[in-house]
Length: 144
Image: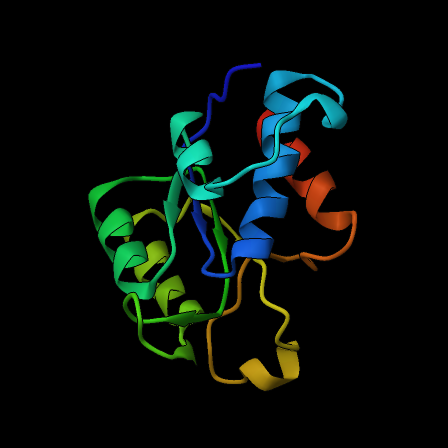
């Protein structure tokens, strides 16, 4: 299966990124998960398959300014730059994304409850990274 959509994955947590890579690479390669090798560098693997991956706020800003995306999977808690502490800043990118391309579908992957996101623009959809919901949404992205 070839990816025919522009997708940006904004995720700093390596375990969450590995889970996302596992699901997407499984779907693209159409192989049983047991056949897919252990993913040592999920960001690299995803980039090789045509996905853009940002692991910091500043990387996400650069990707968003340089490209138009069909989908953006956006975490809220991330560092501004490599080596910096994690902050609740990811969703502040939503107005920037909407201004650049209002058709981009933003999928929030934050574990922060909506009640703690008061005053911020919210994503089009919100998923829990830990549940099967992630797998369902990622399949939808690949199938559209």
